[in-house]
Length: 372
Ligand SMILES: *Cc1c(COP(=O)(O)O)cnc(C)c1O
Image (cartoon, rainbow, N blue to C red; front, side, top):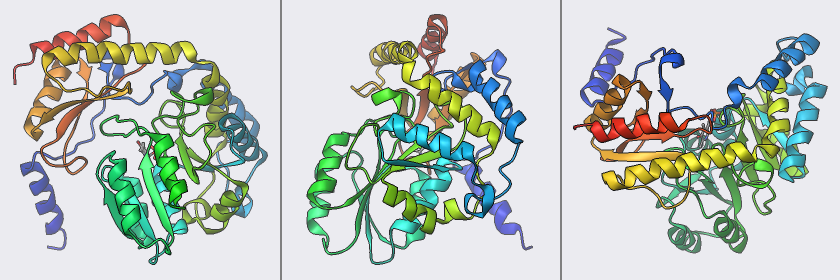
């Protein structure tokens, strides 16, 4: 049968305890520790209001791709606003972080290029790297000495690109960005930073680790996480923007982001710079969770990151803790291979400024009571 490979692939996934299912949740009954809505902006009245206002004024769709008359004043205005807040020459919108990552490297690199990438970069960046046909060289996760060794070792006459994240999506680790920028400069290498998890929660104006930084060629931020909307952007030079407009398939061959989304992004950009109190609460919540995980023997990173991995190792353990937490009305997603390396399955907690003290206590009690 022509579909028998599908049946057997799914069967194998199940045997490996890696089967994924789509499940509907009514968040009302659960405390959510798996959302990237770090500041609660996804339900903020100003975002809703402006999404509606833009819809009323401009409609629900952009009508076409940016280059084919789908480019409107609201796109220009929001890109200018992003660039101003970040402190970059220019900004360019993308329909999603995934789409940007999967297609920008294709424009930047060719089969004669070399991409130096952290071992744990997001799947979308890997897809982009593979699409480009460049030689892909991986450095050990967060090991900048290893990166420097590899840069030293490999042909400097070729086009080279360093690709890494500022806050890693799977373990929350935070990259020593000044040092990466230094290496890129020293070895005259292009630098691509995926800042998706940092937009809204750290940096100048709250606009991420990439804000007010020189020396990053592609600085990618996202609006679907802390910004509470959807879509992504690259902050870059005028020239890089022109290059992407001309060569990046994920920009050229897709319908532009629609008015309601641009409205929500626009409102989030008005709110984010001043959300110091929410960012404070967020990082206080992070510290509180770490303070009760540590005595329970769970290794936590020393730096403060809104993504906290509870490392369990085995897939079954990760699934068992996730199920237990769910019985206790807590949502915490188990992360398993192939998303992370074998033997490093974990529960990933994502913390929000909206979590209350009593919700943090609920999490503490539930994890303490778990018998594996
Ligand atoms: C979420 C994420 C993306 C994808 O962004 P979307 O806008 O959700 O498609 C890309 N890179 C990293 C590191 C992410 O965490």
